[in-house]
Length: 324
Image (cartoon, rainbow, N blue to C red; front, side, top):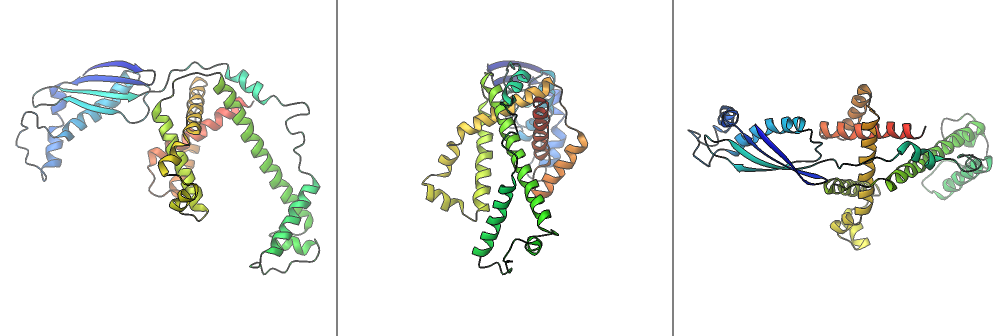
């Protein structure tokens, strides 16, 4: 097989190649067997070879090309068959999006600068106070009073009976302890999210590269899907929501472009850092988490689910390294 690779841009290459007729023809019997009940294949006429025969040949050749030519491919290839005739080599052209070439800045230094705590420490002013716990309990009592569907008799005072009416709590002390734990965890998660957002934004500011359009489009699809889920969870129909905000689905998707580009750039940078740092996801954990996704989303593609989970777990490891 003869292959030539030419850079079209920073994010796309064009692959032209020729598969010898003997390699191409080895797929003939398999194609004839499969198409036997559909078409009469007594011998291919020049220019009328079944496309599936070419697809099989290219299906075998494509992974070899990507590996041997060290092409960091992303997304689906755009394949064009330029010559297809009986007894002749198969000639083809492939346009393939590739990972952009980027030079990472000193990301560890930037991460340290991004998370350097202000005077008093990062957690200063974030401790959950007893008053805040009491305010939550007061809000719970207020909501129970205002909810006519709640037939639970509300104790007149804050006592152990009231605590027991809210769940598996023996007394008020246990209730307050649990509320404080939950509030502390919620604040820590928020701090963690803000910290990581600051880290990646700081690195983004110092990293310049051309963004593959396919990545942005994919993130726009994800953002739209997430919004649709949120709308459905609120008990609304998408068409009603669109009518309310006076936008079409296309407009709704397009307005997410800036956010999608930022998310896509972040993903590429984190992937590059993982590559440089040789960060690998534990296989057992990957399989376990992938199965959870497949159990939750019936009919999901296993390979796509695995890739999605691996990306999340790898990003988690990268951030954990950057936060040190």
